[in-house]
Image 1 (tube, helix red, strand yellow):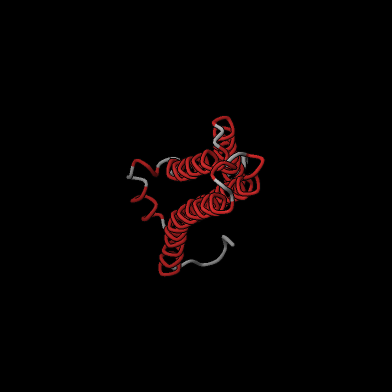
Image 2: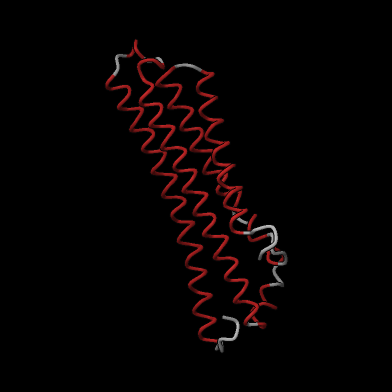
Length: 180
């Protein structure tokens, strides 16, 4: 692939596509987070609707809690996958910058673009914040449905840990130890 003759228009077009891929994934992250929190709210509403207020404990509401947990973990997995797509688009951009040396020199003047590791860590705070808000929504849902603080913290921590694991896997797959 490196023997292909590149012209500036091709490089510019591919760079635009990589840029679009990044912003599309970022928009999907917002959308996925909003939908996850909304769906968790719907599950809480159904749980409250189908159970009497005096039956708000785990033995009566566990199916709703499992559904809410599944939604939260699925959202964390999807957010990690989207972050993986962003990391790949940034890696593709870096490759294209190397093909157009003038563009590479210009971009390297920006302080956040000097190291390759920036591609994996840039935007991670945003993704972690979204996962954190989903964990809070899951915690509130758990407390409303089960009124058990231990279970509330347990479900929230499970969501945070799942998100961290998924993000670590995404980073490892996008940037293998000995690869680019």
